[in-house]
Length: 234
Image (cartoon, rainbow, N blue to C red; front, top):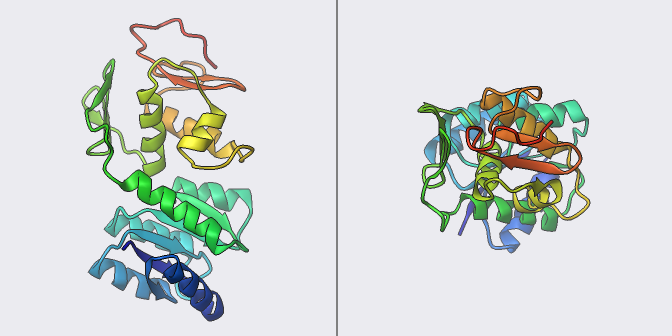
């Protein structure tokens, strides 16, 4: 049974959400403050964290950074803060998902199940080599010219999916469906933002792409720059 850590300071929301998630088959422990959550996570990491940003003792974004310092457990930010800068900031600091209140237990359950699927051992465990780029799905690590890339969980998932489709143009629709597990019509700004971050981690720019080619309005592809130096990209 997956163990969820619910960090929410509103007692009514915390009680209601905990009951709903337990009814869906999860083991749920809850914390009403950042320090309480850190103590829980230090004792046992669990499987998924659901984090509200509005906490009484710590800013939720600061707590997000602290949690990543002690654990690699996936984190879903579940908050009333809906401005784009806050969403981008949270994703940039390593949040795996971002949902805005009010949301249903069913919606949260779908996000949790998607994270658990992605965290499960993959059937494809052999490293993928593209030029001097090596993606190891078993270790969830990627190296370029022997240098380890410091990828977030979502950046690795994006890179791995593109690598598994080596040379093919992968549409934004497919990336939203397969990497973000979002239905058709989802917001593709997250795709653009993560492609940009991934490009930076690879040491590339939009003007001088090498491995990561982004086709404006279509999608992206991962190529061997030595084998395909003239691929059209933006």
